[in-house]
Length: 458
Image 1 (tube, rainbow, N blue to C red):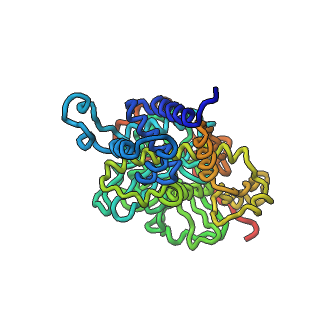
Image 2 (image 1 turned 90 degrees about the vertical axis):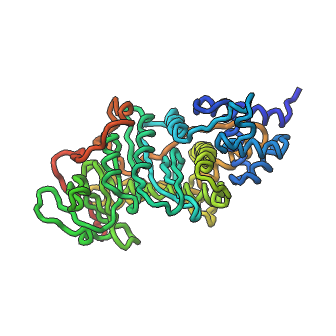
């Protein structure tokens, strides 16, 4: 006897609930079921609006819309706002759940079948109107980004963000096994010496862009130079050990990487703990992928910008459903992209108004010169975004009651060296949640060296 589509869909919901409960064990069974409903509904509705999700799920399975709406609301409500709380009997089981702890589990889930041991994280705040600011850390993946941990603060709220970033980084570090190479990127508005030292303490590698404000002193020099005077030719890169910033509190001993790309008014200035011969300016080009992640989460993907929610704790819980839906779609989209068309001709024929990023080509300019053996073959252009591919695959599978999970296929870092990038040592994860930050740091490098790559066409 043939199984009905409705039965297949219900079984898919149950299997997805089981998968969420297995990978996010801090969720109770009802909480895992709520997360399963939210994540499936977000995908089907291509929106995280409660109204749209209820409609999509009610069409997918024969739910009572009013009961479903209340169930989805209560999933992100605090315990005191849930139906029956404090009334005795089953109401006493109503509880809050902590998105922070679940975020660490989310990263561990991603790493379970992540090929290789290289991970690129980006730290970046994003605003939801003038109501909230989300401090978000994402895993960068194939032109997009998967949110893995976040903190929501009131828009315009005074106070330092560094404690929030440090807490989140330490939570994540506790779930990254020894031997992984973790690169952490931030934009120039995010730089702080405290954040740099926190990352070094975790044995992760900061790659933080700074403003051309202040002074630097190359190793072996007694003279402080103005960062604004560090001028490069188009396509030229410099990397050298230096002290950056004159004031004692903010001074860093680091590697300073500078790159002047075509079309940029000023060079990128990046501070890192990596040796000059190891650090590649092209890696910073990956940071733009988190902007594509926000484009999907807030805009054309899940339309979170339109979500009317007035409580920051509820928004933090809803962001978990958004993160899980994004992870699911990107995992399937990466798999589809690996198996799908990539030919140049097809790309030109299929080019649409949606511009999708690929691996940055900056490394080709870095590698140009007398030696051409290190020049990379250009990556094929993306015909469709990984997000768009994954959403189509998942939507079609859910429509017929299939549960598809996909697999990770990260792209190699551009210009990645075969040796020299130190991995996380054993025992680091166990220490990630305690201990004071280091006040000084020696770069992970060989003897002082100045590396200059020039574009021989300039």
